[in-house]
Image (tube, rainbow over all chains, first blue to last red; front, side, top):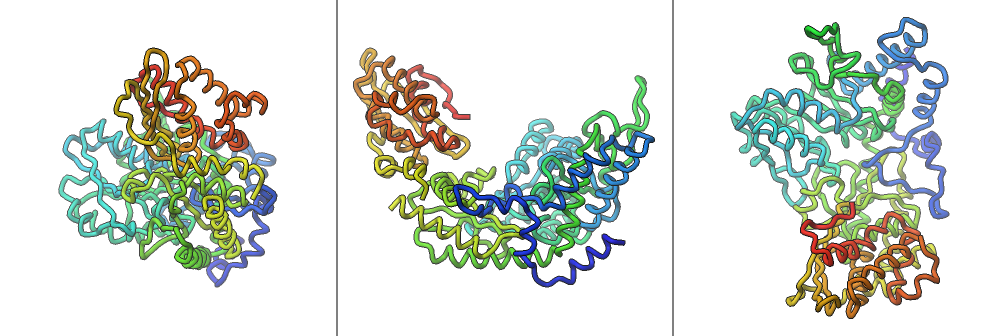
Length: 418
Length: 150
């Protein structure tokens, strides 16, 4: 009941009270190099509110026990809390059923699970279609699957704004396309893909679709039933939750037909040396003791985000992106990498004549934390002919003043390299 | 700006980063190696012309950050006329300098290379400063595979 109220409240709030909610994030009080921390590396990982930190600490202080096995009180409480977190995830992405939510280590593991398990039905000549803007974690598992199965990996290209070329994507789908795997939001460019449309087109060709939602779930409303995606993967740590916990959503009928991935405890019904039968969903895919504390704390992170209202968060981040994009346009020698019409709060750029790593080091000296590098998307770097970019990425607690600090620090870069 | 940053990006470093010396392919090279830093994507090819044991000429080409480019530029200047053994000894001294393993006094025989001493306050950038030197080691030993900092 209490949770219902929190969720309802969130949907009514129009605007974030950022000054107040920043108080929830202890780390934002830190200083770096004698300056207040300006944390703009949220696409790598987000900071955690006290509600999440306390939830995890409280679990270990008061409840810690193994789940799904013990008959004792603590084990019951731990199991209930873990399963309650699963229900929160289910509601957060509007999955039809709780057993469609598989807890994994993160997005990477979720994609590897699908490639390893669903991938067993692929053979020579079958095709897997990805896009040019994928993170390495949505490229390499499919390359490995192709090596194992003889399937062929195809790559749908992007334009120079960083948008998927829809007509080419459509043409690249064919009767041999078995799996389409694509990012909901590009981590290197910020592009929001029209996933609903892309999924519909893929389904017309009989392919199943996995959506890498690592950069989307923390920043925009995800409704897996409305999307009609077959698999959806995301990580807890980018969503204000702990590291080492993530989610694979899969349609029950697909998960049910898939062979287990890892063998061990919890995923079995009965084991004998003559043969073993497997547990029901989702436990069939959750061998061994899971990250119990992480799962429960992810539930707390979802409560926190839902309490604020994901639409209010999205609106705030869009406002920051628009503000930063305007400042970028006024900054001499700065070139944006990724200028799609629909973007999340990711500002990727290069500075004329200055390597991204030198920019990153100087910004750090000003207390501004950004990411410099290829962002695990080397094909994207190749498309734009750059070795690396600087990436500032926004979260619900960032402010206009912090965007100002970023651009003030960029002025320092020009001073050093004048 | 912090004094650490000023130490890192000294004028000489910025200058060699922007206008690297000995930049380009060395046509008479008889040793070469490729270096790669997967973390930041820096790549360089190092060319050496050895006469017997003596490095007569050195050059490099590639793309990288200011630190790695300046380091390669200063290194190729320092190598000319050195024996392979002297070059390796220089690497050892340089490595100690940028990792903070040696006090400043030990930097004296390094000459201009000492300008990169500021790197010691930036552990994440040590690989940028040492990429050229690891590549030198590979070139002297004619390693077939590109040397990687990872």
